[in-house]
Length: 259
Ligand code: SAM
Image 1 (cartoon, rainbow, N blue to C red):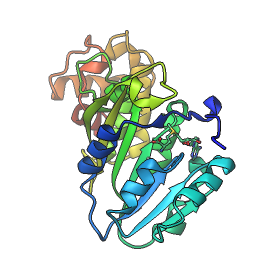
Image 2 (cartoon, rainbow, N blue to C red):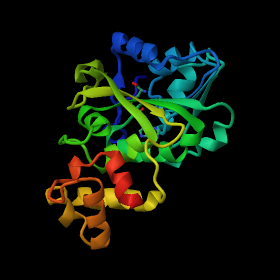
Image 3 (cartoon, helix red, strand yellow):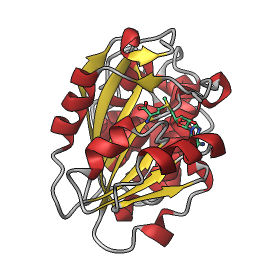
Image 4 (cartoon, rainbow, N blue to C red):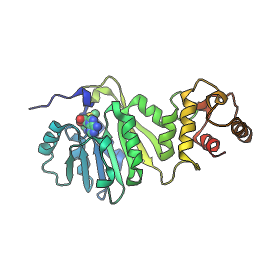
């Protein structure tokens, strides 16, 4: 009996065969790859991925969908279905050999926590491929001087090389979500994008700057750094103290944190 999609779990199933093919082609999968799929749903993507790689760990939080996955994918011996919440999933327990590829058409309401969780396990990950809400994708790949650029763009771009590969119309899903989507590729960097002496301070400065993004840099960073350090930064790097925080690139924030 078909299972009714649960809105509370972000269950919008991707049914467009062209998009499924395009996703598979974009992931560059090889027979030695190990893949973690987040939110396997009814297993359409899982089956295609499994045909290309050595092993798929298919994570699904919904127990009733896990039953369907077991049934639908029983002829694939390289798929392990795991009934777990990705946010509580210890990747190290499963991905202990070569670095894995992570693939997921993820629930939109927990996109940020999922990415934060994956970044914690970045040493075990080669590349993350995600279908996310279009607006969220814009924030991930945004560069300085744009409206979508913010602390989350900096966080993700510090650890990954992020690209938006293609757009997916909402009608490609059942039931169709209210918003369109994008398919993202986040290649985990061997080394972070910029050198910082103290990562905690670096991210604290970035968050503080964007918390007051309408203010000038001098005002938004007031209290975060001593005045003389701020002045030294403005002078040394020729940055206008009256500019808005979105003018600063990742390298600028690193210079600011390192000063
Ligand atoms: N992969 C399928 C597809 O492309 O059609 C399903 C995608 S659907 C947008 C998201 C899936 O993630 C759902 O099957 C949902 O039950 C599952 N899910 C939701 N929250 C989850 C969580 N915290 N951990 C693991 N899976 C979750």
